[in-house]
Length: 345
Ligand SMILES: NC(=O)N[C@@H](CC(=O)O)C(=O)O
Ligand SMILES: [Zn+2]
Ligand SMILES: [Zn+2]
Image 1 (tube, rainbow, N blue to C red):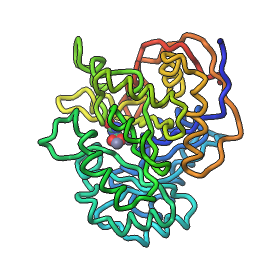
Image 2 (cartoon, rainbow, N blue to C red):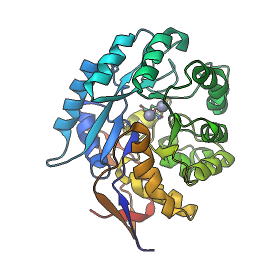
Image 3 (cartoon, rainbow, N blue to C red):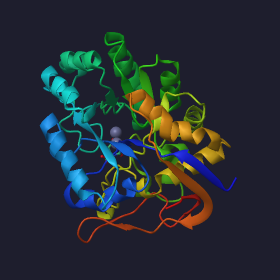
Image 4 (cartoon, helix red, strand yellow):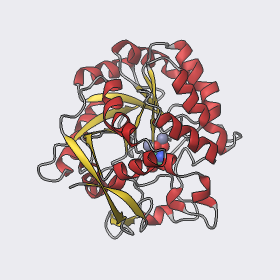
């Protein structure tokens, strides 16, 4: 097979940042994706519908001329988000989901939720209006080993949350473990998951063996091979519960290559090509369209994109870097390495 035609994909988990950084990165996603769920972890975070509307305008203003890319906005849940904010969000038609960051779990999560019990009425309102709760699923108890934080989260937070709110739509974001893949596969239809390309392609050896590679450091952290295999199996299973979410998370080179480097992998410029590589590894390219373009809209209650894209089998190399904010570069995942598939322009 030398070409594959797909319904245009969407990215159900994306970081676009703001200002100069936003302008530097948004075109990479807009060249591939019809829509993306935009993460709200700005500094300060996007906690109100009014802020989400204003952020959406800044994204639209930063898009390349003529782009039809549609940003789908989210709110950042805090201990004090009132249920009325969820009603406003639902009425806006522009905010599509609310994001739960356990306080301290990841980049810009300091204002996140300290105890989910504080949010019970607000989460009940989400269930009532049918708006998904997107979850960064890692515990923040620093006594728990970093490689175990997702599996422990399922037991300590996810299961009690769903027991309390059985109809709540939940997206377990960027799953990285066999436990999460199996949990979502067995859960009722109101529970789904996004999977990144990097967690499908790499295990922790890529980051840690033969030298430390900071551009592969992201949260949740890359796990051992057994978990990668479970994610590949889930993504290519044909189950509508699993869909594309790159978690493309740009950070300046200097902030990654540091004695205390930031978490986040930059995959937006080659997003669909990276997923194609993972699906090809499983000889499951025939399952790529459902994962990339159909399952996500179905879960969010939106139509699939009307246009198509074509991937061609053509070897190309990712550049060593992309320009970022003044004087800074971003190093993409697989910088300088080659990929077998290329999206036709
Ligand atoms: N994934 C990451 O490693 N980083 C994300 C935050 C997140 O999605 O947890 C970021 O905003 O940089
Ligand atoms: Zn996250
Ligand atoms: Zn993210």
